[in-house]
Image 1 (cartoon, rainbow, N blue to C red):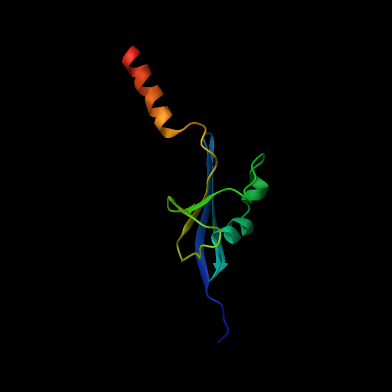
Image 2: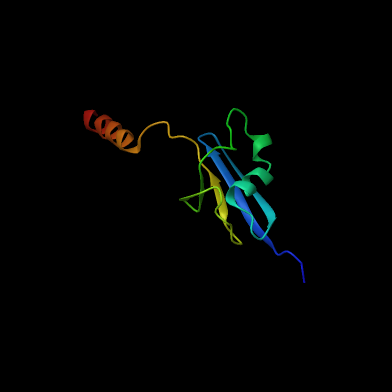
Length: 98
């Protein structure tokens, strides 16, 4: 009794030129933000503040205090360069002009 269960999770971050993915073992009850802080991403990624970046689990946005389950993948999101609707419109225009 009194033993804390540990969970295997992953933390991921991607830029167009590179992707980071790290596996962690964390205590049960760990939140998404705590997992990011426990990961080695902060030392790996320069010029980006992961401590305030939006988070998600398997493609769905979650709050910092979202409690993780075994096997979850916490994703650290970066700001979009362009609105997705605008990007589709620009691609369509380029395709129609030839």
